[in-house]
Image 1 (cartoon, one colour):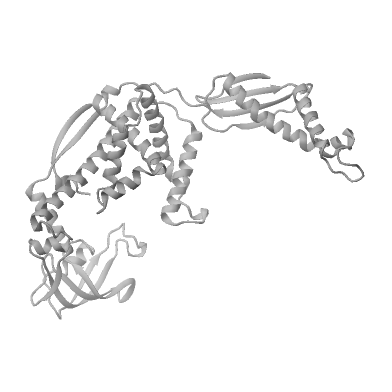
Image 2: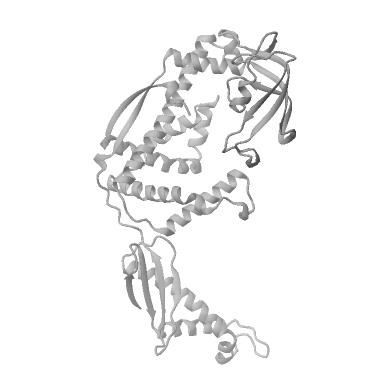
Length: 429
């Protein structure tokens, strides 16, 4: 077997493999002989078919099978011989023989890049130091109280925070607009539910009021026919309602299934949940900073083969999430290109770091990850045991843990600064 390798790009390789005719003929003849022992051809007894007849009947098919098998084996052997590390399968192009009886073909493929990590100590990370104050807790409790609140009708003019129930219709020069009519529609003032001009007109109204006003639609409004237009609206007010919040007491705690410990236990649980939410966001933000720093510090070419595979994987996942079965309706492949490239690049960098630092999965951290995943379940201990005794689940979690160990290593060696911020400010969308 003769092998030659040519670099046709940063990662692309063109490998020519030539197989001697003797090797091919030897394999073809061996298979023809094997087939001849069992071939059933009309006019001949099994095992007594002349070799010439077997060759006429099966020769072309067997030669194609032999060439296919030899290409597969010789490609694998050549890759090992040349110490190449392909990033994906090759494109095979047989050569047309002119004066040689040997069989030759060209395999074109990409190789994995040689990744050499550097500048890891120059990665900068700003770690949020999130404090949960009493004011933050009060604001969260207020949100929870609103979940259990009720609306009651009031005999006064509407104000911020009230809910008004209205009929409305919109028109331009007397012609109704599409979707511009509603019956007994609830609007909470101050929540930005409607366009600013529309909501502004709902302040100071009371039951039975009828009112007309103009609304200027923004130039980027979703309905093109209304972009930048002035629309006449008429409303009828059915009622004005105010929000009645429950008191902060044991009854409120019971509304959220906290019966043991009363309001004190409820507030303790709320604060603990806030801490978990903040810590989860901090963890994700730090991961993003570390990974971005790792990418910026280590530019290199990635195999386009891997990027294309990742793009198709992401598209498939998106179709499943959106419930799309028809591939023609799938999100365009190009939508995933940027993220796919980042994922591939990160995967190669993290894999190299794991290798360089001899990182192995810490089983204690695997259990900690499982406990974190199960923390929100009432029977969390049972869920943890179920997960930890399921090899398939553990195998899915281990790469996540190993990646986090790599992030922790990078964080230990990065330039880390701290930024104090309140829970409320930090958790704003």
